Length: 613
Image (cartoon, rainbow, N blue to C red; front, side, top):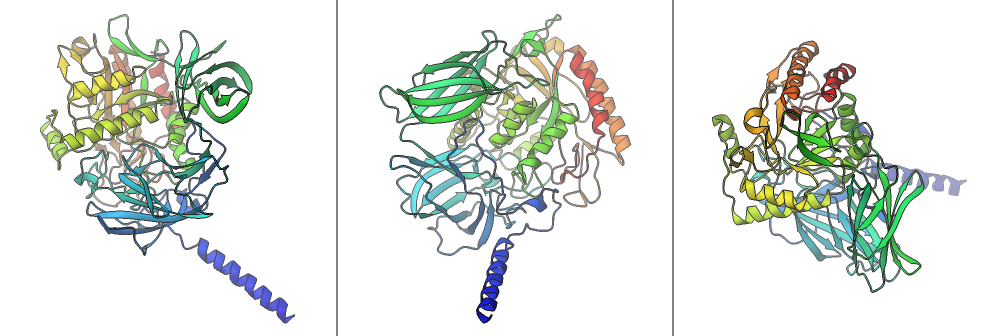
């Protein structure tokens, strides 16, 4: 009996200890939160597979509670840490459990352990980061395995040689100067105000491991030709040996449609009989499988997908250039999507939360999203691919020079400016990485190198490079910015006007012959909702209203005018914005996503006629 009581007491203590260990995490209080925040735990933090365009079975998610420390810049690996942080949420966010600012004079350190993955003696171990802002150095068992500069692109390190035992230590150092540095940083500033938001430092997307054979597929480049009804797949292989080939196949609903075997770096051309084109309302995706083979032996295999889709420009009956999807004019209309969250900042609290924004956008009758000076996880673009939302992808802005952009906005002036050689090199490298890493997503139809005149430089040169690097998409050289003109022809395909709050367009008589005409930002109609604002005072919109009826009536007037502009030659428009963000209250939804300010069914009925023109 006594032994039983002792055993019971020990079990109870163990349960209490386990409970205590799992409840040490809690979000930082003080700001509004989404409904998904309450469901976030160290065990379920973004457990979805992070790379939908190239899937493997052998992977391990490392998200969860890690140790963290904020130390002066330039120190060695810390021997003691400040507490725990929930990865993959940035240290400034509520969901990180920390809520602290790092700044340019300090570095953020992480530490965790991981078990050696199951592998054969020849297999390699790859460590992946979805994104970490900005300069990241990674250590495994005390040894540096590499550095990465860039806040928006995924990166990886081969850590096979550093993994020594069953349990291994992973430590990460991050330096992020925010708006004190030369790097792309989007809307982040050390002193948030107006349209500028809280800094995001460190890991903000999933960290994960995978095992691969000594020869393995490292990349697929997927494209299409809608005229020949072909999917074009180019596999890249590391460690390829003589005689090894890649078998590429296309599938739909479990049925093999086409197959071809090629050498590494060669393009497989898969002809799809009875092919359907990808477009809003009919987002047909074809599954892909790529197998690295040596004779009859399969060495490596990855899954992917592709679509038959073409974006182009062509003149209409009046000679005005139009934006064409699969050879037909389709008016593109969607919100400016900042991709910020009150609880996770750059990181949605969950995959479900992230998809909620996309779904509500579609439910309201929009067919496009402009992803504004931010890049999302690959899973976001995958959702747009599956749901049939067109995407315009901005390059995150940076190096804008201590309020320079705000001063020009007030004066109504815009011009290119010089960057330092370091800043220019950083921009070029990260823009290339973003274009390469997100090339495979058919939803992306427009690249936007610059927004307004924020850090804009060498516009003609950057635009020409962008177009040459990816000729399959349209290029909006400077949305609302400074256009380098040659007569009436601008750099890039699109001339893009910003106007608040009313709907206007570039003059079709001047620009329409050579350029697609776009209203890149307008609206910004504000409605603060008590209990659902970032701060109670000093919130703002471009034009504010007292209730939802007044807001909808004003918006309906904007859409009516928009229809008239489509008839006059307008190809696309972007309404500001998907949600409120920090002190901005001009969203279709509140920042916490708990209040949708517009009747969804009314919005869809209002927008529907725009696409029938």
